[in-house]
Length: 265
Image (cartoon, rainbow, N blue to C red):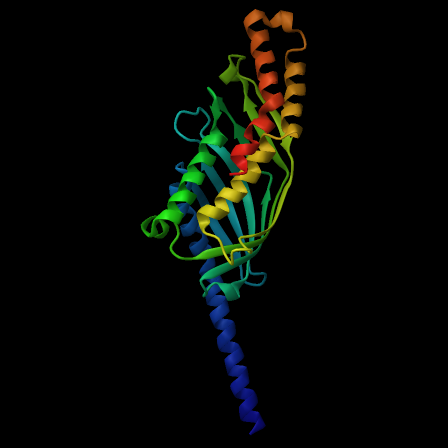
């Protein structure tokens, strides 16, 4: 009798293992489809990943070549590019209404910051995300278009080793790009308080945090230092170029405070 019980339990374990493995093997296409399908309506820009591979042993997904395009009217093709993003998913949550992600780790993102008049590319994208979030709350139809009824909880979102690029050609200072390190980001328990958040709500919180770092004092001060080095001899640049350098520097000084209200919305 015990023998048959053990055989029965063993069979159940094998069946469960097969189900988990099959679920994990399908996780890559699920993530890729979700990002490429539901991302663009939220950001109103090009947004895609090239591939998603999944390790069955570690239950970790690796997202390759993440690309977030710039809104129309900006010169750079991309706002954010990342070679690899690592995602640890709680596979037991895949069959429920709330998908739990234990950890997302974004390594060495390339950020292109670009101003246009009184706005910039990140403010434009964040405005689009805010509109998508508001629209999702107001209409069930929009909710279905932007990610079905699935909710998300992310326990740890970590971004490290990023770089911010500012193209000076937009300021009439020639083909030169200033680059500075992006401060790291660590967000915890996104969506946990409300027992799960929509894709639009998650995107808003993450993107607002990213925007806050891009426009932080650490970044703007570093850019100001680079500008001073670039224009160390302002007289040699000529009157117009010198004024451009000074103008960018002044913009940088108050940029963080200027955007705090928008990010907190």
